[in-house]
Image (cartoon, rainbow, N blue to C red):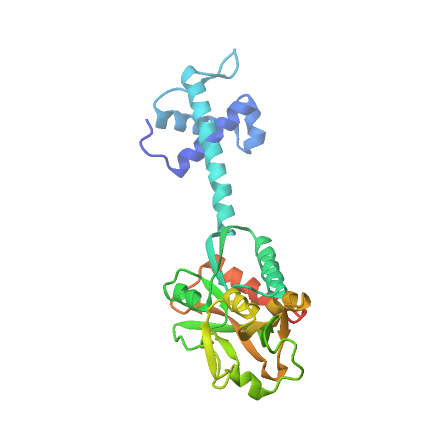
Length: 303
């Protein structure tokens, strides 16, 4: 009786199934590349291991015993499961698995969104079974999620002062000063800097910028962290404020926003940030590789 199944037992079971499917010892010689005495010897070894006869040979030809019939079904099932396991194990060896969690800033330019989509398409061409999680949030929240290692990477503007992060530059975004329809400056001619200094401006916590940027007027009765909130305050016609040029374009085309002094524009650097202590798995590393490859390709500038 078989106590434990070892490799020699599997070889004997394969030989047994082959003999049965060939129709007997003699017919199996060519299939197995073994002599008939060797096949008989190995069949006897299997019967000894099992403790019962599997077949009979005689004038009536090759015939399985009742126990041999049962073993044949069991052996075929076992060998099929082993083959399925082998295929699955080999498939896993070259397949990316797991989850990739990507954070990104809100209100991305269309060109940036298309690049990110291209990176995802490129990643999906790999041998993978990976769940992608995309999370849009303000920079401060993305930074916190990275610190808590709840994201694998994030695309946004950051202070660059977090020693725990690795930063890789991706693109730049231009910001411009705007006023809304109904504001005193909306229909004014040339706007002087002194005029701008006296109007109410939406304060946005641009913590990532160097000293002196962006322009700040002497008055501010509104504060907003998110672009949508800044836009709403500007559209009220009571405040001026900075917006990414791509976000303001459609509103400007509708005659609801006016761009003010372009000499006060500034550029925001967007980077890919990752936590140094969070060693990337194969899937995360592959996604970042595809992302950086796509953003390094020449294309229209998202500014």
